[in-house]
Length: 167
Image (tube, rainbow, N blue to C red; front, side):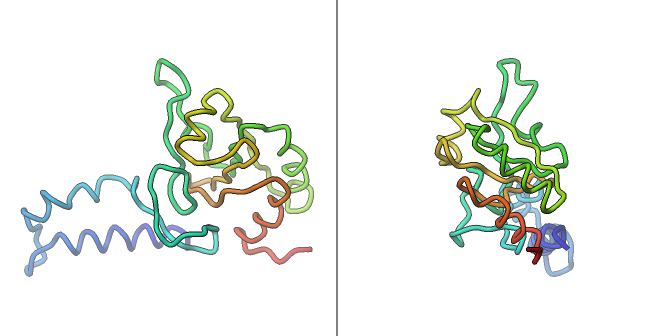
């Protein structure tokens, strides 16, 4: 279900690039064809995304968009994208304050959340994402940011993102 919006996005773009015969319109392809190259600027609304604004700002870690890409080393071999690797991931500068909440999620909901620190790139991470030292980004296994959150809210936010009505 979650992948359907991405498919619809590309189908719409593809149709928009066609002429009246269904063939590629060369002039449109030159100006809009870049939109078919991956989905870096794709964002969407969903029950699996908790966001405050209806306007997307891409590459900032805004909920409904992909996790921002920043290099983690000088050799440019590892990036923030490597943090996710197909699992729920909580990205925070101060991981000690989040450890207990992650353990509660595992115990109450049965989901392992990977906890990673942005400490090595803290200044750049805060600049790009607008997070404070206390806040964290919850990223889904598909690299999309589910929400930005403050300590004490992880369990309830995850229940909402996963549409769980457990108590």
